[in-house]
Amino acid sequence: MTKIVTSLLSLSLACSAALAADAAISAVKVTDSLDAVKANSAVWSKAKFSSVTLYPQTSIEMNDKNANAITDTLKAKKAQVGALYDGKNIALMVKWADGSKDVQAGYASTTYSDGFAVQLAGTTAKPQPLPYIGMGSAGRPVVVHLQKANEKVYEPNGNMDVSTQINRNQTALFGKELKEYDAKVASLATTNYARTFVGEGFRSLTEVKDGSAKSTSGMVYANGGWSGTLVRPLQDAYVNLSGTVPLAIAVWDGSKMGRNGVKNLSAWVAVNLEGQKPNEALLADLTTDSKGDATKGKAALETNGCNGCHQMSAADPKNFMAPSLRTIGGYSTAGYLRESIVKPSAVVVPGYNRNAHKNTPWYTLEKGKRISTMTDFSHLDKNTVEDIVAYLQSLKAEVE
Ligand code: HEC
Image (tube, rainbow, N blue to C red):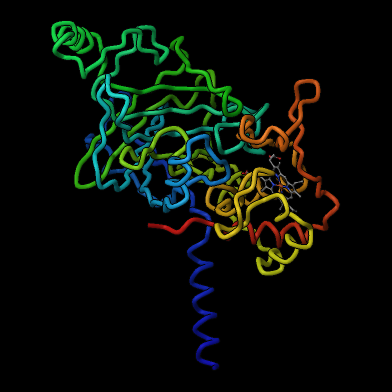
C-alpha cells in the first residue's frame, strides 16, 4: 500500500513539473544586420532555442462540426523558439514538427495549408494586463503576423475574393478558357502569403496595408518539420519592444483541416532582450504558476457553481452557456485566469455562436461596451481564487 501511495505521489509531482509555464525565451543581441534574415541564415547559430508548448484552443465551439471534432482530439505540440535582435529589428524562428507538408495552391480551396503566426501585445505604456490570447480584446490591441505555406496566391482585389469562377469538371467545354485562366493566375499570383493584422478582438482584425507594418517572414520545410522566420522592427506604429516582450505563437496543420480556429496556440510567453533591463512584473506574470492548491480549487469551483455554466472536462456535455474550460490552462496565464474570475468584463471572450444559441449570449452590450453575463466572483477571498486558478492551470490538452 505504502508503495502505491508513494508512486502515485511521485507521479503527481512529475505531472505538476510538466505543467509548469514555459520559461522565458532569451533574445540574443547581435551586431549582424537582421534585415535580410531567412531560415537558413548563418546568424541563427547564435540563437538560444527554448521549448514552447502550443495547445489546441477548446474554449470556443466553431460553426463547423468537423472542425470541432478535430479540435477535440488535437494534442499539444512542442515548438522550439529562438530570437535575435540588433539595434533595429527582432528576428524570431519557430521550429515545429509536422509529418505532412501541406502547401496550398492559389486556386484550390479544398486543401488547407500549414502556417504559423506570431502575436504581439500592442503598444501601451505598460503591457499589463495583457490582451485576450485569442487576438486581443477591447482596449488591449494586438498585432498578428501570419505566414501561410502557399504556392501561389491570387486575389484580384486583395481582399481574398476570387472574381472568376471556373468549373474544372467541364474541361471539354471550357478547356481553353481554363488554360488561359490558369496562365493568368500563374502570372499574377504572388508566392508568399505573409500578412500583418491589428485587432482588439476576434472580428475586429484588420489587415495593415498602408506599409506602416514592415515585416518579412517565410517558412522552410525539412526533415519532417517547418522552420518559420519573422523579422520585424522593435518599434513601429503598433509596438515598442524593450526589456521583456510578451508574445504568443500559433501553428496550423493543413492535413488536420488547420485554418482559422483549428490550430495550436501558446499562452503569452516572455522574450527577454538580453542586455536590457527585464520588466520584472511582466516576466513574473508570464512565467509563474499559481501557488494555490488545485485540489481545493476543484472543490471551490464546484461549490461556486462554475461548472453550471462551464464545461470542465471532455466527459461533461458540451454547453453553450460559457466557454469550455476543459483545457484552459494550456493557453492562459495565471494572471488572466485570476482576472477572469474577479473581473469578468475586463476581457470578454467574444466567440459565442450567435446563430446556435441566441438565448444564452456570453455578453450584453451597454453603450457599445461588452458586459459579460458571467457572475462576478470578486467577493471570493484571495486564497480561494488562487486555489481555483491553480486548478484551472492544471487543465491542459495532452502533449503529442
Ligand atoms: C452564469 C454562468 C457562468 C458562471 C456561473 C461562471 N462563468 Fe465563467 N464565463 C461565463 C461566460 C458567459 C464567459 C464568457 C464571457 C467572458 O469572457 O466573461 C465566461 C468566461 C470565463 C473565463 C474565460 C474563459 C476563456 O476562454 O478565456 C474563465 C477562466 C471563467 N469564466 C472562469 C469561471 C470560474 C472559475 C467560475 C466560478 C468561480 C465561473 N467562470 C462561473 C459564464 C459563467
